[in-house]
Image (tube, rainbow, N blue to C red; front, side, top):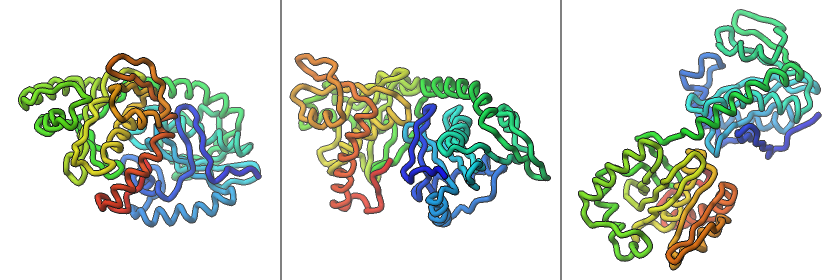
Length: 381
């Protein structure tokens, strides 16, 4: 009987697919206990440790090729879940299909298709079974796969799906969903109250009350050599922030403040945002910032551009005499031009994701060794 490897991954229709692990327990519980989603599924405990134990038990079935539980992500952000179980020589049952209310439009339907494709294509099964609560509004979608209704009871309708009907029915949905996903990706914006915690740092968007901190960094002679000149006038900085907030509302410019345990560490910005690209700059951290915080802040800014905003290209520039070029080159950039003042870089997600791993590990280890963050922080996004 065909089996999936324990490290199975797949990228299809813009979704990344992997098998569920213990560290996904919190996400699973958050979906399965969400009152907006839990009406049509079995009840789930809110106990994350109990969910971890369930996953440990599931992993034994996964190893036997009896059960596969998939996590679907877009640009590293979890979107939802689906599962194949009761797997026999010729058949599988699909269920546990649940996606976040905040998932990208179309991701849920595409996740369902991918799950069935894994059953039919990868595992080479001939029949798929599933059941749907009678009061669920997705029966119209199910029927596009030309299923056979094999039985019904007071609670559910039970379907049998064959590859031929499934392959015919999915075509239109896939095209529509991928178009919807692409349109949403182009229009994706951060909320005005955006906040993120990653690698031990807290991240939020700059506000007027941050003007004094911004001026203190940008006029510090130890830091200002490689940046544009900034006025020491705090009221002028506040006006700049008010103007920036108009661009922020349009999704054209995001200026981030990075904090550690509530203490400001530094700043970075992504701007000139288009459908597919962004430019990173205004990267400046206090000389008193925690060791490693500056690099982690730079990495988080790029992750926001690539992962949260779904952009495909990052641009950046650095002064010719700046000592950061060696760091930038770890992301396998293309030098697109140079002039007397700057070197201009183009960075793609693949090179960035490969290059960031070592930096994250080294910086977080440094912060842990300095007792700045606790050992429970991990380097995974």
